[in-house]
Image (cartoon, rainbow, N blue to C red; front, side, top):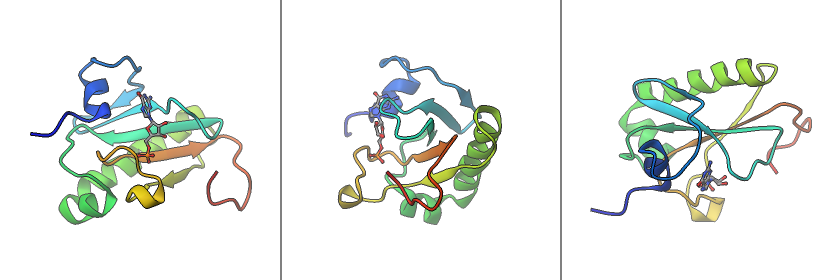
Length: 115
Ligand code: 5GP
C-alpha cells in the first residue's frame, strides 16, 4: 500500500484543515496557498482515482457530484461563477495524486485561463 495522500490525512483529521462542506462521497477545503479570492479544493473521499482522466472513466457520477458541490460552494462563498481546474500530471502542475478540483472564484481576471 502507498502512503495515504495529504487529502486523506486531512479527511481523517491527521492534518488540520477545516472541512467546509461534504457529502457522502466528496468534501471541500480551502487551498493552503490560494491563487484567487476564493480558492477551494473539492475532493472525493476515496483516493481511488489519481487524476481527472481516471475519475471520468471510472465514475462519471462522482465527477458530477464534485461539479455540483463546486457550484454550491461558489453560490455560498462568491457570486456563483467559478473556474474549475483539474491538473492532470506533474507536467501540468499536479502535485497531489488524489484527484481534486480547484474551484476559483470571487473576482477573477476576465479572460484569464489560470494564474
Ligand atoms: P495540484 O497542484 O496537485 O493540482 O493541487 C494541490 C493543491 O493542494 C495545491 O494548490 C496546494 O496549495 C494544496 N495543498 C497542498 N497541501 C495542502 C494542505 O496541507 N492543506 C491544504 N488546505 N491545501 C494543501
